[in-house]
Length: 367
Ligand code: NAD
Image (spheres, helix red, strand yellow):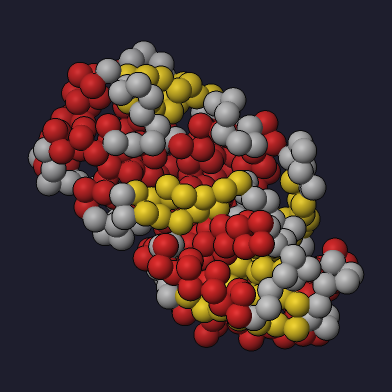
């Protein structure tokens, strides 16, 4: 098992436990941190509860916690006002207080919703992240962002709220469907490209083992991602200095793909992989990087198993969606543009230039 410390200025530092079967130490870990707490509330989803709730409950009960459970539906639709209001009510009904602890047992949806409900109920109840998808282990469980969606957009209401600790048990990953696996791999590839040549080379050399879900390799990928993400979050806790923007690499086009195709048609990570290919070509066209970089990145994404996405959309339709992106400033589209492996810039790029590249991408995938 490895234990990484996330030490954000002005916040209580917290540990991320990564390894095989770390879920069995959930109860003892929490007991060490919260000597006087006796009540925990697990928030999980309908898919995860059948598989891993008994293990989580057993570990907590062994450490003398009284355990309540709220099960929400599986899937993005649960990050809604309707669902969170039911969760708040259920929190009140089970007598949750600030002395209790909320445990998010699930993927990014459960983590975001449980984190937001914990940050708002009684103005803040401590919470623990137990991520169960690859994406939530490498990305969403660390960094403190919580959110729910509104009908007009994703993640529009939320908070920054750090967990007490994160418990990432790689033994929970074999049951993950292939599509969700690939989704996590997209975020890992993004991190490798913006982090360093060392991570990029390591991932290129272990792409087949990642596809085969070899535990020791998966563990190392998670560790490398958490190290990178925590360094970024430490430098830019509330997304104010601009450093945290690098995490949006590939996301401008990805959000347009997801919105145009309809959420769930392509996994988020798959859309991010396509967004990375797009941003790399944009960058090369602007003279910020070279063709070698574009091809090296393509090779990595191909090795990891990302097919190219083709959309039957018009340039105008995609531009309209991108112009509604949260990253637009004063009407200008902003892209995280790679300069080399491990180096990036954020650029405001004119609609004219972006349209040319969108047009080229759409045409290349139709031919
Ligand atoms: P998810 O939580 O919807 O999980 C994907 C599917 O896998 C669900 O059906 C779930 O029930 C199932 N599942 C979870 N664990 C499983 C397991 N071990 N075995 C079998 N099935 C399992 O999706 P996700 O990709 O984990 O998270 C996506 C969400 O994360 C989005 O809402 C996104 O906005 C959010 N997110 C948040 C941050 C952040 O910093 N807070 C970062 C990235 C993404």
